[in-house]
Length: 232
Image (cartoon, rainbow, N blue to C red):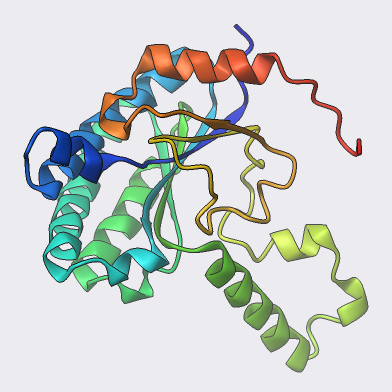
C-alpha cells in the first residue's frame, strides 16, 4: 500500500456518536480523543509521515458553553498527556491556530509540548486548535503588512513561497489526502490554502468509530486517483 506523505482529517461525528448511544455529547468527544491516539499509531505504522487533525475551530466557540467547557477540559488534559505519549512514540507535535485566546495554562502546555517533541523523528502530528483558515490567512497578511511598513518586505517580493512562510503550517508539506468523517462534505474553513491539490475522501463513519481499516480504505481510494497537477 502506497501511503500518502501527509493526511489531514476533519474529525466529525462525536456528538452524533454519543446521541446514538443516548450519552452526553462530551462522551463522544472523549471517545473521539481515544480514536485520535490510535489513529496516530496506525498512520505511522502505515507509512504516513504527517498527520493533521482539526480539533477545535474558530467557529467552535459558538457552541453551547457547557460543551465548549467540556472540550477545553478534554483538550487541556490531552495536551498534558501528549507529552508523555509523544516521547514514548518519538512523535513530533505542533499546534496550529491562534492560541492567544486560550487560557495561559493551555498555552504553556502547548509551548512545552512543542519544545519537548521538536527533535522527535517519528510521526509529525499537527493539532489544529482554535484554527480557522480565513483567520490564518488574515493573520499572515497582517504580519506581511507590518514588515512592509517597516521596509523589511517589498510587495513585489511576495509570491506563494513567501506567503507560505507566514502561515501556521510553514515548513509542513501540503496534505496529499483529506479525510472527513460522518458524511459531511464541506471543508469547514480548514486548510483552504494548503488543500489546493489535495484528494478528498468522505465517509459516513462517525469519528469515534473510525479505525485502521477505515484509514486503509481512504488510502486505497487515494492510490486509485490520477494525481496530475495542473490538469484541467
